[in-house]
Picture (cartoon, rainbow, N blue to C red):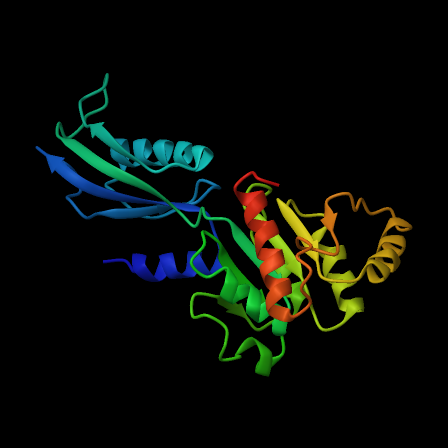
Length: 253
């Protein structure tokens, strides 16, 4: 049996959109029985098998449609002879489950605001990926267990992350304004639904001039990020950012 659980864990960590195909019911003669699984990726590649031939072709076709619609569904595959092509003659029922389709927040900086933002977003639809190369901060005890931690250089993370204009949200709040600008510069070419950065209006004015002079389009950048709730503690700032992110997600912005 192939390690589909391990593959799902790997895809979850990578925030990779995919479809988990599971054979839920079979009648008559079929190449695989109930419980057979395969995982289909957006590029058409797949892992595992639901039987090859007709069922696999159908599963791949249905899975790609599920990815485009971002919707799970139940599908029935009749394995009848078509033209000169033989088939088993039975029927297979498959559940196409879209995984890792939740909105994702790529959070750069595990400081006090970053940790608070992870806590505030716990229990929401967001999968939070926290990025920081500092050992003592990325492993802080206050970070929720559900937060996916990445102890690496921000540039390495940006390069390997999965970007999508419908589900990728970004909040930049590192310990250094120069690094904030560098992170922003590398993210700008990628599609995002939300792109915000912590900072004063003065800080943003300097960064805006630096990047605008180099031809970057900054029209989608929110800085200072967050709704103005009048608070200035890390927790209050985190709440204001979470409020703005959720407003965009639910179409209230």
